[in-house]
Length: 324
Ligand code: NAD
Image 1 (cartoon, rainbow, N blue to C red):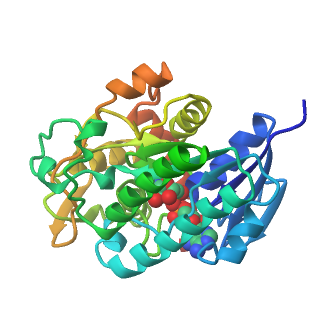
Image 2 (image 1 turned 180 degrees about the horizontal axis):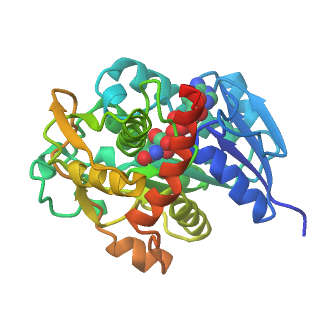
């Protein structure tokens, strides 16, 4: 049998870079595409092309000669970024996804993986820190908090229509807060686990054990390590499940608890100074009932074990930056 050829878009980013390595280890031939090279380690793809996927001609080039596409490219970041760049996010991500999906169809791609997000869930279901975990069907009536979520929701529908109208097999995942080694940890696009790890690493290395946190820290989330995310992506892509599926942990913690867990791993005691800042929805958790049914599996890595892998990597980055 000939080797399956796949394209990973966003291969210079956090999950995309890990996915390239994972798929190559499974025996696939992998082309990676992004507007940038991976920031923290070497390219691992068989072929890597720098292409801006907002452009149709670049999408045709990226999707040529491949059997499958994993669409991870997105203009995105943590709450700080998402809550302050609505137009840019909606504009750029719509162009990327509309063009990549259509180019995949034109080039005869057989299977297409779309990365949606828990950010598609409606605001009105996430007003309480002690939130009821979100089931896939809770997406409607729709009311995502940000433009980022609205774009993801529309593209979920576009993928569904392409499958129904053109027979392109689409698979749709809704990630819930994926974290891990080689994720963005500074510069304004970092998410809570990486931002807090950076602050705690700086606290440890400088001996000033006070860190700042946006809001009161009582908002809740669940966090999933990237290695579990990769396994979930793989299982969903190989499954015959066509509607959107949650992929994340269903263990909810407050952001204050997340910070304390990271401090424990760093081996320091911290004081948290709460300052005004974007917090996102008050509570969010994943209902994994369907995930377990469909994938015969669920994330295996505990929050503490995941942080014990990710934190030392960020501390190493901070040490390098501070010249320590
Ligand atoms: P990331 O920002 O690390 O990776 C996205 C990559 O897309 C970046 O490398 C970026 O350069 C690239 N990109 C942006 N604009 C591009 C363009 N015009 N052309 C080509 N490439 C472009 O993010 P990530 O955490 O790896 O997320 C991957 C996917 O998963 C994204 O679609 C994201 O929306 C989705 N997602 C992630 C999370 C999470 O917790 N990390 C949660 C929900 C959904």
